[in-house]
Amino acid sequence: EEKVIEFPDVEAQFPGGSAAMMQWISKNIQYPEISIENNEQGRVFLAFIVEKDGSISNVAIQRGVSPDLDREAKRVVRNMPRWIPGEVSGKKCRARCRLPLNFHLN
Image (cartoon, rainbow, N blue to C red; front, side, top):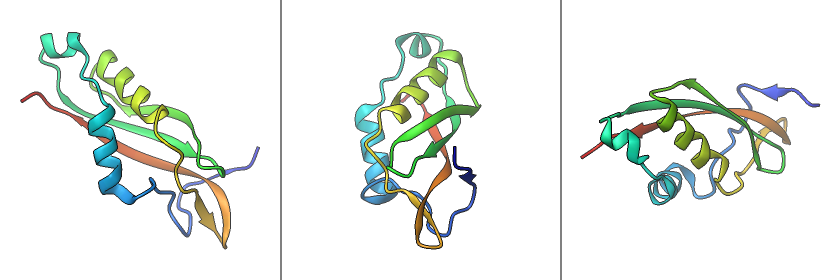
């Protein structure tokens, strides 16, 4: 088990960058019905590891809003396409990433 790098030389990134990631998230996120009924909104903070092959593992909520929104945030991150892995000294590494996801009702 290789160690996870908190601040790699080259950050792991979503293919196409952050604008592509936001687009992908908005297409794939499903606001839970119960959260809409309960008027739950806010920002869920997640952390996860981008593995050397770009897959995502160890998805964890760092600061949540509600069980339903937290579960949906985790589901979306787990289903993301493979990322471009981070690098240290020119070698691919396991890198920790953090991501805030906003849930807001119109």
